[in-house]
Amino acid sequence: MNTARKKIALFVGSDVTAQIVLNRLIDDMVDKYEPIIFLPTYPNSPKAQLPELKRFSFYDRHLLNDTVYPYIETRRIYAPNRSPSIIAHDHGIRVETVANVNDPEFIEELRNEPNLAGAISIRSFQIFKQPLIDILHDKGFFLNLHPGILPQYRGVMSTFRMMAAGETSYGWTLHKVAEEIDAGEILWMKARPLDPSKSGYALNINMAAIGAQSVMQALKEVELGNVLIGSSQKARQSRYYTYPTESELKSWQKKGIHLIDPDEVINTLVERFSQPGTSHAYELTEQLNIAVRDWEVANNAAPIPETEDSKLRNHFLSSHKGIVKPLQARAAGLTERIASSFKDEGSAPAASVR
Image (cartoon, rainbow, N blue to C red; front, side, top):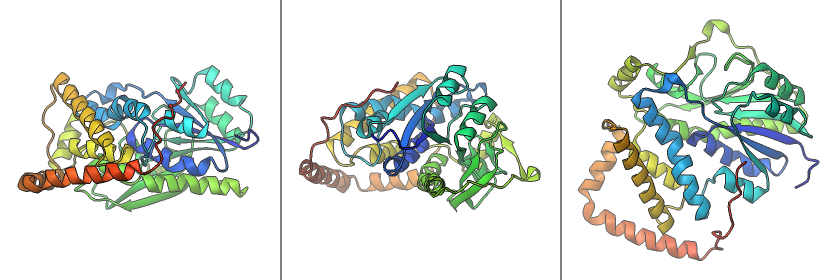
C-alpha cells in the first residue's frame, strides 16, 4: 500500500448496522485512502440493564461478534459483508481494538500518526473527550454518523424513539464531533420512509446504505479539497435521549413497537455474512440457533412478541410444509453447484485484530 496516501481513522461500533456500513464503505475507500479501523469496546452502561435491553444487545452485537465472526473467519466464503479481521487481511490495512478512546497513550498515537487527514465515527458508543476531538479536528476533520435525525433525536436508540413518536421517516445525520454528545454542526441528513411494522433492528439495517452514502459524500468533498462546512443545531429543538425505562419499553410494546425479531436476526446475519442455500449458510444458521437457545435459557428470557412480518412468515411456513423443505433442498444443491464453479476463497487466513 502506498504510504503517501492520506489516512482516515474510522471508529466503528460493534453492532450489525455499523459493521454493514463499514463494509459498504471500505472497498471504495481503499482506492483513494488508507483507512485505519478502530473498534472501541462497547461500554456496559448501568442504564442498559433491563432484560429487554440486554436481549437486544445480545442479538445486535454478541451474535455477530461471538458467533458469526469466529465462524466466517475459519470458513471463508464470498459474502456481501466481512468481519474487520477479514477486511484487514483482504486490504492489508490496520484494525485495532480500543479499550478507551480517551486514553492519553491512544491520543498520543493519533497525534503522531503520519498522513492522518481526519476521522469518522460510525455508531461508536464511547464518548469522545475534548483532547481527542481537538487533535482530530486539527488533523483535518472529525465527523460522527449519528443514526437519528438531529437535533430532535440525540443520544441512543434514536430509531426506536422516532418509532415511538410516530415519525414517518428516519435516517442519519452526519455532523462534526463536539464534546457535547450529538451537538456538533450538521453537514447533512439522509432519511427514508419509516415502516412501523418492522422491528427497530430491521429498520436500522435497512438504512445502512444511506449511512454509507453520507460518509462517501463527505470523503468526496475532502478529495476535492473542499472545506466541510456545517450548520449549528437549533437548541430549542434539541432533545437528548438515554436508554428507555421499563415503563417506556412497556409503552412501546403496547404501540406495537418491537426491538427485535429473533428469526429475522438469524436470517439477516446469514444473508449478509454467508451465501443462503449453501452448506456454509446452514451450518452458520445452526450455530446461531444454538447460541440463541443457550442465551435464552441462561437468561430465563420471556417470549418475544411476534412482529407482523414474523406472523406472516410463520403462517406461510406452517401452511406449506410439504413444499417448502423440498424447495429449500433443491435451492441448496443448486447454490452449492454454482458456488463450486467459482474460485475457492476459503484458504485465505483471517488477519488478527490488535
